[in-house]
Length: 422
Image 1 (cartoon, rainbow, N blue to C red):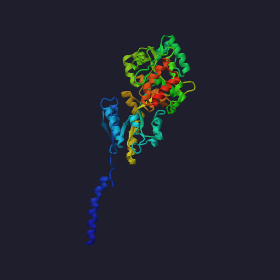
Image 2: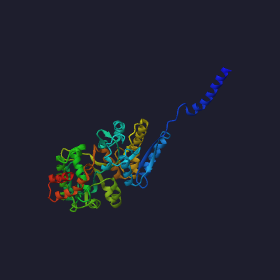
Image 3: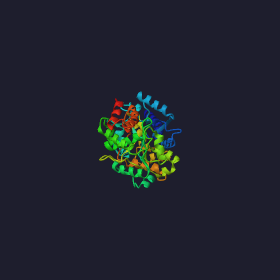
Image 4: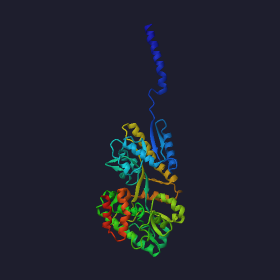
């Protein structure tokens, strides 16, 4: 009886175990990793549909393993406030849109708040990104946000007006530019659109930034205002206001004045970003058709081919010590930065990204030009506005006006900026 009891007990135990083994394969199913993703790319935002599509595709591919949940926050000011509050409390979302500006960079270096992607970006993933964009987001050896949406501001020029003046192509050096400017003026065409008005003298500020990039290269903005490059760039900027190289109303003129002259074909050369494509296509279709993009002319012995490109939104993530959660975040970041995926967003909504990619040849030719010049750029630098405090930027237009009027030399132009810095 004793042996029979033991045998019976063994059968009972086995009967209880077998269903569990067959149901679960002898091991527990791993828990699904859920990542919260608050973003303002929802609602009426131009990228909303494609971002939702990409998130849904990612979730389907990783069903049961990883799920990204979009938390819509259509009010950008409210979004920024929420993110800053959570960053300040050391509790950022799992994944979120990071807007690089002084208010958010204040939390960038905080230990244990944001995930550092520098190890993963040192491999194949990092090769996707446009020249210099990873470096721009790397501070003290740590890359705590992924470059994503970018504002690229190349030189715009009207090929039809160039043809009328007998100028075959956009000049690659400032010496060539002088000759091209003279040919344009001989044909009755003012070469460039400039401006000093507005909060930042936008068009001329971009010209100054391109020139600084040619002189100083990818690390140009690391140099203090006492460096000779700033005076040299001011001298060259002054030349763009001199000898009829811009319109008579450039001093005091704002963005509408600067852009209006280009749209009306009163000037041949302009600077702006891809957001201006809709304006030119709608208001001046003939100019839209004739517009080409280029890198700024190089100073003597300087760099050429670079672009002025400033981050508009990055992707960031909360720091985690959980290796599986970290791997899930990296997997999602890689998905959102796939060249084919960002190309779909560009084709659908028009924004550019800090990634080397191609778009469908059937989309707007000028948008194709933007992608081309960004892909070809050996490096990018941010603009003057992104490199210096607001107080310095606000003095830029005033300093130009004084210099153009003869009230300040290029050296004194820089001194005005230095005083604002102090």
